[in-house]
Length: 128
Image (cartoon, rainbow, N blue to C red; front, side):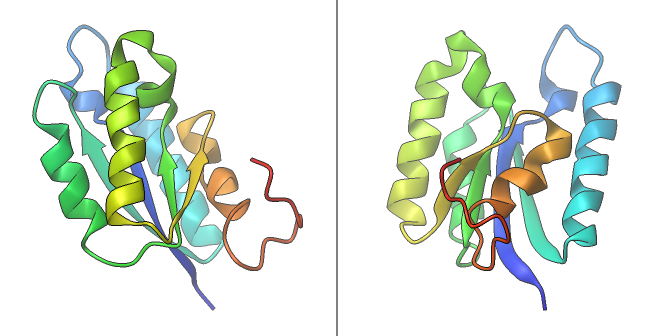
């Protein structure tokens, strides 16, 4: 039985100037593979902060009903992106009000963040 669906919102590593995207691209691929291992349906919405991320996020949020939305650390942890992080949280509240909101530490533990909030969570915790 598939769990989810989950939407992962993060920064597109290929569109961030000044650094090598390959390690992050590889980590995202490993993280996506972990969703499949856990039987969790997951969609990705990767955005660039300077390229109208709100439109892409709203389109992703309204594609289907999500059980959980995971907001990536690239958006949350980089202080200059705080306004984007606030917009993401409020867009989730507006366009996916029934979805839990979760936060990952790395692209590879994204499924763990989602599993904390999906129905049938074996840990019994919902404390993030």
